[in-house]
Image 1 (cartoon, rainbow, N blue to C red):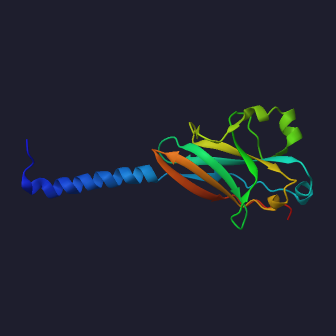
Image 2 (cartoon, one colour):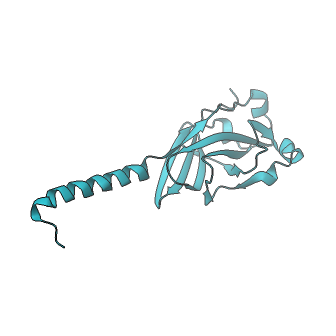
Image 3 (cartoon, helix red, strand yellow):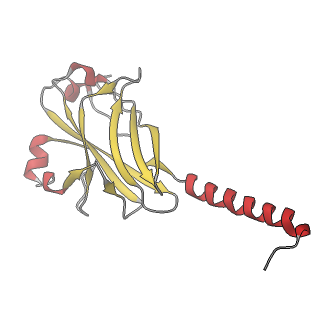
Length: 166
């Protein structure tokens, strides 16, 4: 059965509309930080050692994105040396904890690697392991998150507004 020629324009308009709707739905999702911005006191920032800082995040979109990479940037956009994790338990890490507190609470067992982590729940927590012996960790300004959704790789920079040592 062939489509009559006078219906071609309508078929094209309907097809283009459907393509635009699908394109919009695939590209409308994004990540957001929710809750507070953890702040680090000057006394803590001057110590040596390791801190774990948590950020509550939410995915607002369709599907379940797969995280590829989380990078931490300073105000100048330079990458800081951190180890990112996803917190996977209901007994969640909140705010800022020292390595000793993490070990005492057995929280480290609840951390998993960010690479290829599929978000089954739209709300999740990113935990950064920071070595305060690194002098370039004086300011954490942004989280740069690379993720894959519906086969499309996206990169998003989120202002987390931390200020260390101020």
